[in-house]
Picture 1 (cartoon, rainbow, N blue to C red):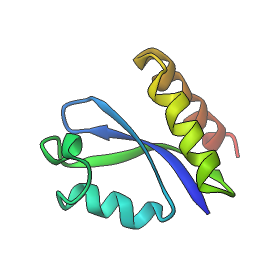
Picture 2: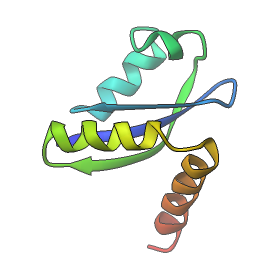
Picture 3: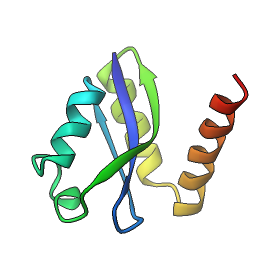
Picture 4: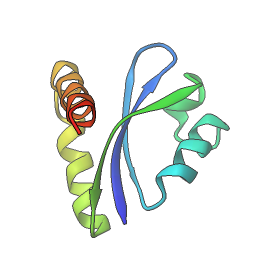
Length: 87
């Protein structure tokens, strides 16, 4: 599996990335071994993710999300939170 994810950083900012191991990648970000951006903004928490069959799909979705406004990213996060609540 491949994932596109959004992290919420300590300072409230959002970081978008992709990985083939979500748990490991989140741990790397929190250990300071992830992206430079998140190293200075730890701890980070997983706010949103999507699952894909291929890394190309995950990378394409990462590209799309990175071009969204902050407001649209927050909307994605809220929609997923609502979907989980309604299950």
